[in-house]
Amino acid sequence: MLLGSLLPQQNLTLAASWPGLFVDKQGVYWDVPLSLSADLASVGSSSGLSYHLLLQQNSGEPKCFGGDETNDVPLALLPGLCAKAAISIKRSIDAWRKKEDKLKMVQPYDAFLSDPHVSFTGIVGAVASGSLGDCSKRISVPDEMRKSNAFRVFHERNKFAAFADLFASVTFTAQHGNFQRLFLDLTRVSARLDISSGSLFLRGASRLAQDFFFSRRPDLETFCDVCPDVIVSLQQQIVGPFSFRVESSVAIDPRSQDHFVRVDDSVFAIDWALKVLGSAKATAWYSPKHQEAMVELRFFEV
Image (cartoon, rainbow, N blue to C red; front, side):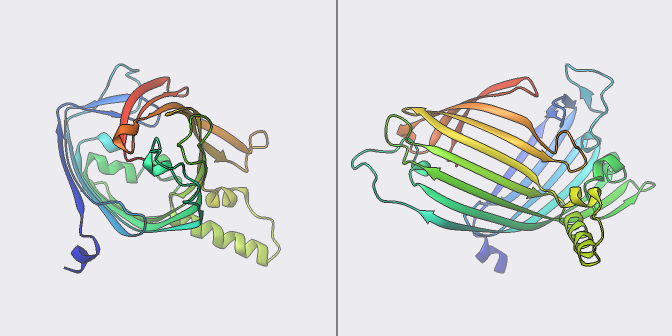
């Protein structure tokens, strides 16, 4: 009852696919003979408590789709039952927002992009999962868990695994312009810092504090533990409803002397704001790293 009062709205998604098509981190597509899933999540809000529950069942051996048969099968796609749960608290703060000086009787190209502002958003949460079957092997593989110092249990004989960890994210967004005029009335930049493993970050921060207190030289591996994943983006109006957008991940690796900061996995896009729908856009994007391009229709996306 208490949970219902705090989270009055939820989204429930039931999906079944035979076969199901999935893509791994290297951009390789995989066919799973049968995939069933049930997804329950609270409706997103600017601030407050939210949760996400997922139950997924895979059956049959995955096969590489149009790729190299020597590629290793992603362990998450192996047969078995997996349950995941995440809960988080989100807080958004406007450092500055300007609602004046808009053109009267002129509808913005996108209602969600009509206010110049500077804002910060923080998310802190916890995630837990349990696996039964061949898919539980991912918990035992060092490469799968190399960026985590989380609690985990793996029983190979019973094909059971459990995992739990913390996570956090901080987003900075700045926008100039009201997206009403014909030229250069929208410039938007954002940066997101993700801490995928809170336990690893806390361990690294503790070690750095001890090294500083005892005047010891910090280990580079410890620096890597506290370096977040960074994603930056820039959007610039070109003319009318058309804008150019680029999004890139930034890798910070203190161990590399040549590439301490490396820009990776960039995506370039042209957005066409559909003014008549209030907040919708047609997007054509291209990823040089994965050699992929797509045209999408998106609604109510900020």
